[in-house]
Image (cartoon, rainbow, N blue to C red; front, side, top):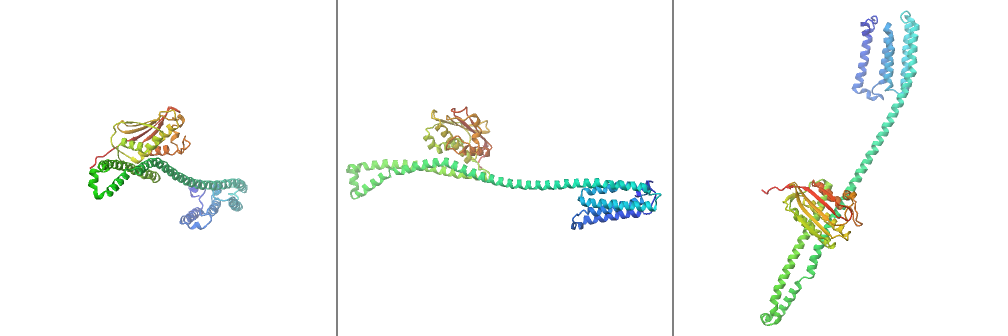
Amino acid sequence: MQYIAWAGLASWHALFPWWTLAIVLGFAGFFCVIRSGWSERFADPAMTMAQMVFAIACGASAYAIAGAVRAVVIPAVMVVLVFGMFALRPRQLLAISIYAVALLGAVMWTMSQRWPETFVPAVELSYFLTLASTMPMVAMLAGKLSQLRSRLKQQKRDLQDAFDRLQDAQAQLLNAARLAGMAEIATNVLHNVGNILNSVNVSVELVSSTLRHSRAQGLSQAVQLMQERASDLGEFLTHDARGKMLPGYLSQLAQALALEQQGMVVELSHLASSIGHIKDVVAIQQTYAGGAASVVEPVQLCDLAEDALRMSGDALQRHKVTVVREFAQVPVVQLDRARVLQILVNLISNAGHAMEGSPGSSNQLTLRVESVGGSRLRVSVRDEGEGIPSENLTRVFAHGFTTRKTGHGFGLHSSALAARQMGGTLVAQSDGPGLGATFTLEIPIHPQRDEP
């Protein structure tokens, strides 16, 4: 109002300073109450209704003292009402609109009665009708806005409910994935341990057979014979026909027992190695489950390939498989021995099964070990079995995929995972059904460090 007077749009009024002071103190009071948090005890902490009542009262008083430019107050009051549309319910906005019309109408009537030369009644009536006619539109807009707010609140609640349901579904999926992962680990352990148990059974059977047919019984008979002739043992050994043969028999028996012992030591060593590999298989699956780092050690890949062939030896003999070794000179390198051995045992076992299902093949398995560019090692297992259709060359590594009636689809999947864990690759190649298949493992070389 003071700006209007300073601009010469209205004559100076003695109430301008007091009106300005009342405006400043009033809104400063609202500011302090809201900022202090004291208004939090109210249903509307912003005190929208109270601020609008105060603002409309200030507008009505401004209308009384504004003089010729009092018409500018009406749009200002409308702005206040529009502001309320975003915070008040329709009934509250209707009440504040009636309050504004009644208060301004009373001011207009009073001023037109006391100063009709300045506040012309006809003009005041037109202002009043303008103000009153806008109230239905404001109320209608407020109703629409209230409906929109209600709809938005409902949509927000629906979105929150959907979000909660998605979180529950995510938790269930995570739990299902965890259980599926545990099941996959268990099946991989059983599958890989089953492959190794074939070698364990062979070693145990050989040791058992050696003990059952041991020449140690002959030693017992010789000792019994010597005990029977203990009184004249010298005479028996020099003059008796059986006694003369006894030293040579004992010499031959000693050599036979030494060979038996040597064979059992070798088989027991193989047995210990197989059992150690079973332990490694379990440890590998534990690293998958817990994210632990793999263990690398100096490995001669050709020797590891021989270990894999030995562990699969019984199955290869059962399938009458001829093994062709194509081993190039490769250096001793740092590798995860357990994982590489697990992959090779699976590939060799699968090759034997593939040729079992292809009776017309020559049952030849070619195992090749070579270095590629000095940075990677390559091991390929080629069979002359039933082959793989082109559409299955990648599917064979999927969990649970198998073409064998007795297969489970775990071996190649776990082998591909193991290769990936080492930063390598495992791929399949085949010219088609009946034309055999080649599985190629490539792994990076980690140079072996010199011992201090």
